[in-house]
Structures are given as C-alpha cells and as structure tokens.
Length: 149
Image (tube, rainbow, N blue to C red; front, side):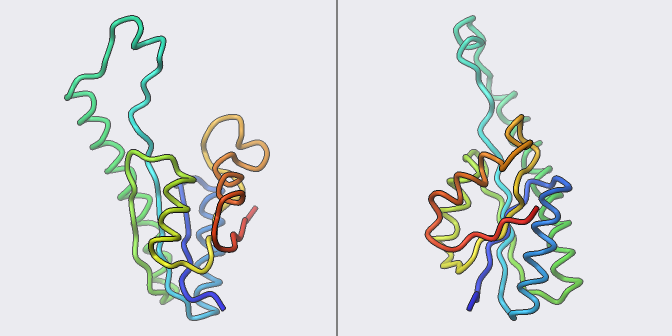
C-alpha cells in the first residue's frame, strides 16, 4: 500500500510524535522513508526595509549557517530513530522555502505514497489549532496525508 513515506519535522515535540508514528508505520509496512525538514528564507519585514536596513552578506551567511546547523541536528535525531527501528530512511533539508510547498514538491519528486506529519509545529499562533502548514499540505497534497496529534 504505502511504499515510500515522507515524514516532515520541524524539530518540535509535537512534530516528534509525527516522526515516531510515521517510522512505526513504515516499519510495519516495510516502507522506505524520507525525513524532511524545511527552513524558511531570511525574515525581512517590509517596514524594516523601508527604513533603509537590508541584511548584508554576513547576516545572510550567518543565518544560512545557523539554519543548516539546526536542520542537521533535527534530521540526525529523526534518522537515529529510524535506525533504531531498522527503517531505511533518507534525510532532506530544504532551505529557503515555505514548508508546505517544499513538502508537497518533495512528495511529488520522490514518488512518495504517503505524507506523515504532526497536526502543528512550532510556528506562531496557528499552532493552537490545526497548523497552517499542515492545513496547506492537506489542501494541496497529491497523496494521502496522515496527521498525527
């Protein structure tokens, strides 16, 4: 049924529930897994730019390096969980992207048959209900989405 499961994580405790559930399902089904985390572009607010401040190469490089380091840690923890269960898992960091878009595009590009993700993550007030990124994936995914609470 599900041969390749895409599991998304943002490193939060709630996202870990989605990772754990997705890995358990993959083990039970003998499916392979891709674990994805997405980091967003450098946050530039219009009112700040209007005041004359634009991030320079140093700020951009520092931000990118910090995001890369963070993503490596998140993915290493998730991969460790897969290894403990004996689940074949690749990891993927998609930088400078919107999470929902990157998740959907990766599911298409890697021919995934299921997306597993948590109901919300660490971003903003939307985490109180169904997360905005989860809602976006549910609305536009070409494959089934398993949402874990």
